[in-house]
Image (tube, rainbow, N blue to C red; front, side):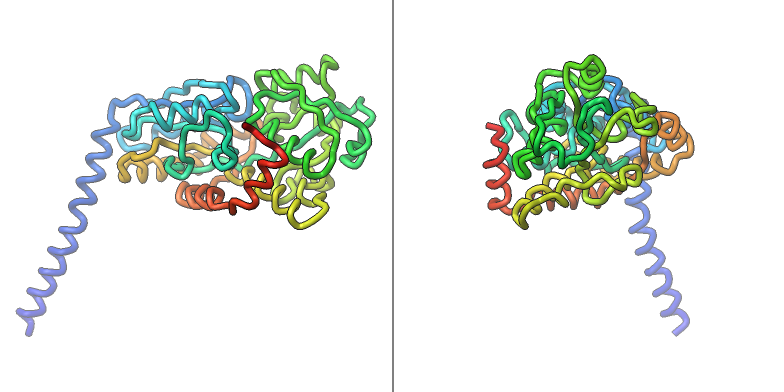
Length: 344
């Protein structure tokens, strides 16, 4: 009996060793692959905005948490509301775990809406993790005689915007088309920074962008009440905007509310990092765990705090599930969004 027990224990130990060895070998392989490598962080926006701030902060810190400690180089690739970068990462970048990217959180919705030049499948990306949700708001200069969103149902507001498929255009345009708010988009500004400069010059009266962009580029605007927030695009009110209504709270019926919530759901995707499709699963796993460690890194957290931007991480596995769910929105709702905001 004792001999039998010993043999059983030996066999069990051997089985455990057999299971452990591939894992150790795999870890060694990941470290060997990344040692001395240079990873690209493809940023679908110009320099200076909150998206650039987040992506560059991740690029500066994530390498020390990836086995082998590769160097991560940020590369800005603006255009088409980040579609240029998204298409590049999906179709051109090597699918080997050496590319990271930050693109617009509306990409999964834009894919479903049939936005021109979307040449990708959002759910096929490997989503590494979210740094923070991206609560957007529409606001005007405090000198504009508009104090609440209800005023915009009576008076037209000129909003600076960039590409028609970017969040700064989609959010206010869908809201206006659903509710009747009189937002007129003035296209052609290359970034939120440029749009807000146009506000200061009096070319336009307002803009729609994330609260992080406003806080990072004009930290005095909100606390000194130099702007008037009118509405926020989110699934729950931001702590700094407790009295500013969310879009879907202003819906006139259940169908409108559903449409506005679907659009606002992109804010949950937020400021995120993804990688290429068809990348080896063990490398994606290593990148996701390195991302998680970066989110807890005191130096990374201190950098975000110094840049006056938020931290609200979501692990890659949860983010991937959220993107898949966004892709499964019923065709009937998608058709309604297309009807009120055709992008073709």
